[in-house]
Image 1 (tube, rainbow, N blue to C red):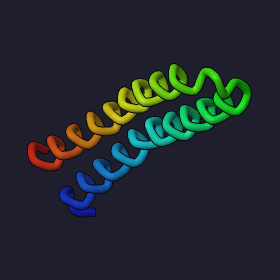
Image 2 (cartoon, rainbow, N blue to C red):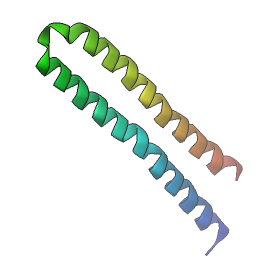
Image 3 (spheres, rainbow, N blue to C red):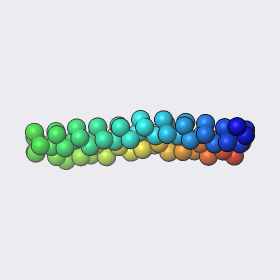
Image 4 (cartoon, rainbow, N blue to C red):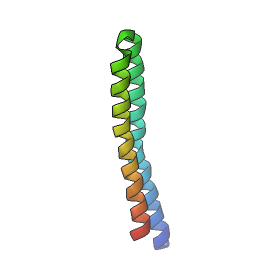
Length: 76
């Protein structure tokens, strides 16, 4: 294989595996928040606030993976 093809394959594999974590985290965050709100509707405000905060942190990991992939594509 050509080295350029191998580089792009490695970057794609790294991004695919790196985005898997944040995707699963966001799904679990949403599931847990909805389950908590269904069990205790009065606590909707604090649960929603914490859900948004944690979802933002999980999204940040995905953005870091994307930035690393772009850097790898430019440098390597």
